[in-house]
Length: 235
Image (tube, rainbow, N blue to C red; front, side, top):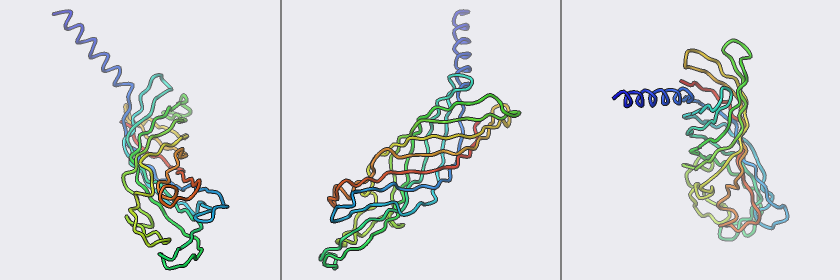
């Protein structure tokens, strides 16, 4: 019986020690996002893709910091994040679209909601002021789109041929970001902390799922980018 009680006590102490190393919280992240668009300028149709504007997006969700040292933590969580921006490209409307080869510049505002799994490391300084530490974050995230709109609509009519296409068909089913950030954390209570910081998210995956595969444009590249203000609380 004594051995069993000792084992249970040791297990409880281990669980308590492990739980003390994990900090769970919530954050919101208003951001300014854009799409990095590019293609050769020499193609006859759909050439010269460019970024044509940014948009205000919003995100938030659960954050989890697992400390493997006093000043080092593996940071993850589950976030709902808005991304997107406006792109422009040269287009040719064919006779089916009623233009008989009319050249024009088309503009698309693409807005996508992603379910995001961040995978990063946070490095904390010692206290720079009472109960205040700085942190630096580097890593990446894996992102799955759960909803897309083009010009505010779930369906978009391609002006080249007047074909209605689901907005989600323009975006690949997977994205990945590199991220870097920095901020400050304030100890509000025994286990409560407030934090605020800035982060940069740079898309690594070409998310175009329409222009090359359906329209047969050549070497089109569209990637996400964004700057976010991270505000949160940990318990």
